[in-house]
Amino acid sequence: MADVPSVVVKIGGSVLERLHPSFYEACVSLQQRGVRVAVVHGGGPVINRLLERSEIRPSFVRGLRVTDAETLTWVQMALAGLVNKDLVARLQAAGAAAVGLSGVDGKLLQVRQKDSSLGYVGEVTGVETALLSALLEKGWMPVTASLGVDEAGQIYNVNADTAAGAIARALHASRMVMVTDVPGIYASPEKKEGVLRTVTPAAVRDLIQNGKISGGMIPKVSAALSCLKGPVREVLIVDGGKPFSLDGTKEEGWNGTRIVQEEGADHVVSHLPTV
Ligand SMILES: Nc1ncnc2c1ncn2[C@@H]1O[C@H](COP(=O)(O)OP(=O)(O)O)[C@@H](O)[C@H]1O
Ligand SMILES: CC(=O)N[C@@H](CCC(=O)OP(=O)(O)O)C(=O)O
Image 1 (cartoon, helix red, strand yellow):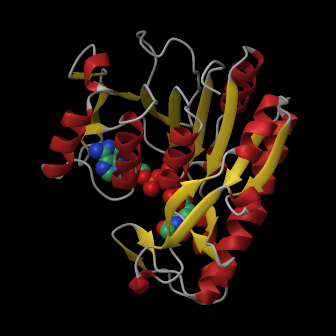
Image 2 (tube, helix red, strand yellow; image 1 turned 90 degrees about the vertical axis):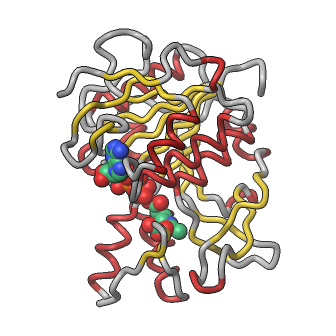
């Protein structure tokens, strides 16, 4: 895989329903330029809606959903069913040869129980890339739902940012793109101001310590930092609801945050004009 560039695109549940049409076009155009594109997705809000219908109150500990056996059935239905098939259909309509799977298929995401108090929440122990690599090599765009499986065949719920990061590392992707509902990392999240343009892992760690990065942004940047220790050169955090481009991310006019390996940083922290 190392000689053919590949990119992992993680789609957050926060933005699923308002993904801009140019998002799908950007994925297709990247693939047409010879880049292998592997999509990984979450779908937290869709899970919540299904749980509400059966009167189960969602519960989270440090951003992770407490997943008992009944919750797990709704997680599977939401992620591997509703969200996965919707995304595949929309990518196909944009011209991609998309194929849907989950981390259970081909033992893609191998996990163990993270913590017994969280129930069926999986911690990734290994990534089997054989199926993904075979699909990518033949020109398919795999779309993976964030479920995992253990050695005994038990299915687990996996945070989608963590799943995407593990897959990006295992595929030796050059980039991971995290598509979400904010235009990047805000320097002042309370005011929704000051989108950081380029940051290093050290700057991200400071922002976490100062409480400037919180909630759903924590698993995102943690996955980013662990990727950047390996072959992934940069992680982009972008708003999928706005006109979307994956070209020229260093140029003015590109909106989003780039997290880069220390030595690759052109600015430790620089700001985009506040929008
Ligand atoms: N510094 C920050 N900059 C931007 N967003 C932040 C920051 N700190 C916390 N957040 C929160 O992180 C959220 C994105 O995470 P999440 O809701 O889990 O998205 P997704 O479903 O796309 O994974 C934002 O909507 C925002 O509320
Ligand atoms: C263990 C855990 O918390 N799993 C997540 C999986 C979905 C996800 O991560 O979706 P987003 O991308 O929308 O955040 C959940 O159950 O919500």
